[in-house]
Length: 91
Length: 420
Ligand SMILES: Cc1cc2nc3c(=O)[nH]c(=O)nc-3n(C[C@H](O)[C@H](O)[C@H](O)COP(=O)(O)OP(=O)(O)OC[C@H]3O[C@@H](n4cnc5c(N)ncnc54)[C@H](O)[C@@H]3O)c2cc1C
Image 1 (cartoon, each protein chain N blue to C red):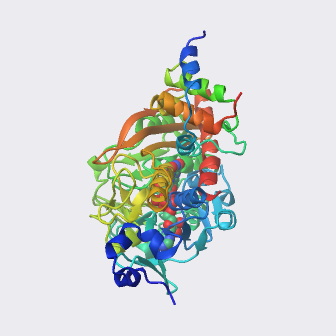
Image 2: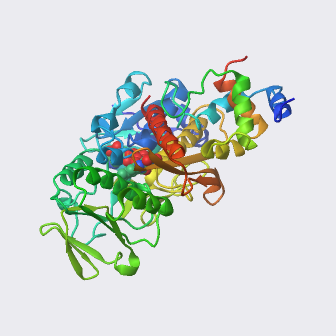
Image 3: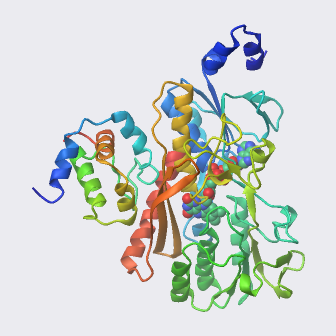
């Protein structure tokens, strides 16, 4: 397992709350546009696992970005699962 | 005949039963009225319309047909953005979201009758009212300045026209002339805004009028991202910018628009351009509705409802909510929490715990962007900051360029989040 891998697998095994995910995702759309934009990547329709891995890595500081680390630090496992299920596509 | 809810409720024998489900009983479809189609209001209208799928009627009252964002108006002053690219209209909100967009001024709120009156006459009934009118200036804040002086000495702190005027004045400055900016006391809209403006004016002047001077007259001890701005000004515009703070009279300032002079604690300076950003308060309609305590409207942190009236929510710059700065990002963030709460009150939608975030990007020079931001939660007392970050002095050029690129992405995203 890669570092963070257990965490990611655990989150992917949770039953996601899609309604909660929709609400949480409204925090993302302030910066992440649906249309392809410069400067900030589009996050919709990425594989679910990619979104979970990114948020876990930001949360534990393995991936660096001031805004995303701050956002991810307040996401619990349930929240990451809900967000990824709402935004992403099952892989 | 218009439908009068009070009469209906009053006329019912089972008054209590009617009150327990007033939205449904009164009118089939509950009615939300939003005043102000800016960062807070447009977002709230869009999220309520989108979330209710026709189960709630949404009316948006906004006088202008095209909203020019204040955000990025400094980049326009810096020659990095066209004014056209800052304008957004309400067509999509009307056509795709079914929002009733009324281009008019709200001039009064009757909170007993639950109606909003319009400048053109007539009134619109509501079950829930959302006010997001932004700021107005405090009269007499800078002696000598009032709305009749804003051509000679523009504020350029509301979108569009005034920014165009200020830009024209900067371009017409005599060689080696002085651009003065009188900044407001806290709290005011966009804490780094005046200093980003100084940066962008300095950038323009360094290209067209490099011997010009910039004079900041500031009533505050310190300001947002100060170390970052000062470092950047030194690096990019060495010697062009001078700041007079409270120690040297920055709190004792008056202006004479006819003479184009500024009196700083008895010292009279002649200037060529004078950008006066007066002290601010909640938009007039919030005062008219009787929802302010002093300059701003106190709100509950979990749903932005007024502390005076649970059926009125106040968003964005006008609200006294706690730790969030008065920014477009914050207004947009608050609007989504408010929309969720309003949908929960009017329909069977689920209500989730309030959560907020903010990031304010500022541009010091082309490709030299910095940012500050935080996450927030609702406590009993206020919207409270839980975690934060800020750009660091001495960051490399690549980081700064990336930060600037991010701000472009943010602008595209937030305006899509507001206007669809
Ligand atoms: C120079 C400058 C730079 C800025 N840069 C940034 C930035 O980079 N990032 C950021 O997040 N924020 C920035 N801001 C701040 C941002 O513009 C405001 O905080 C934000 O617009 C507040 O949103 P709001 O909904 O409260 O008000 P607004 O967006 O101002 O919207 C208010 C709307 O209400 C309407 N209105 C007012 N009264 C009435 C009435 N009686 N009836 C009907 N309609 C009415 C107005 O026409 C207006 O359209 C900047 C501001 C300035 C001045």
